[in-house]
Image 1 (cartoon, rainbow, N blue to C red):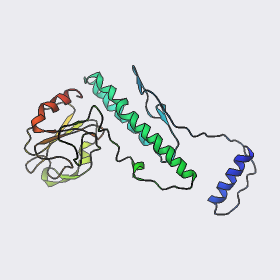
Image 2: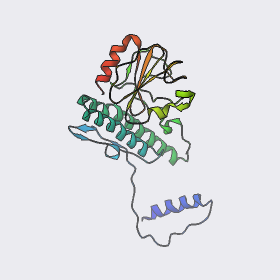
Image 3: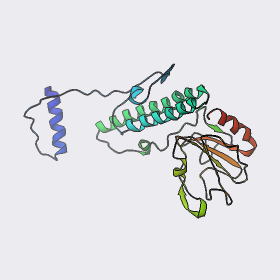
Image 4: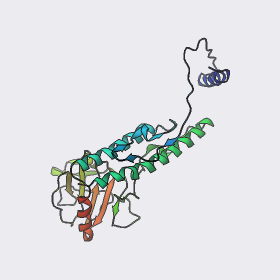
Length: 250
């Protein structure tokens, strides 16, 4: 360990000990850790996919690494499963399209937090929670109901308390959990033909779910992906577009 590093270590230790003294008597092992922020140019080449730390590395500030890597894995996982189940192989092209921009933003966030930490600033904003991440610009985001809504295609689906059979309260997140797609049918919209891998709930006073679902209006369909993001918001008049969308993912 160099004299410079010993001085830095001692000063840091003194601050942590509130003015106490820490003496280093023996250093048996030491290494230098260099902060890096790197992003792969491509997430896929042929049958090879990069996920997690293989695709992006960054400073540990903000604790974004594990969350981002798990999101990568789930995004690719449900798409691989869909293609193996018969969905078009083009679905796999959306993995890089959706996940690489998220990693790029995360690298910028982590690097910015590192600079603030060096200046003694440790406060964290809402962006660290990753609850506002979305993919509105994705080719998988089909929004035919108009902009400016509370929930749009590409947004993370919010939770809500709804009522099922026997007026029993249920969490919307509990219904969405799992590898399936979820179709929420607004009051007055007719049901779609059953499909394997699609869970359908009629929302309304006489439906299988009663209560308010964020972003769903009467006469509309809201399709939620296996990873909890809204895939499509479609009015009744565009029902055929929804059927076509489902054929491309199931």
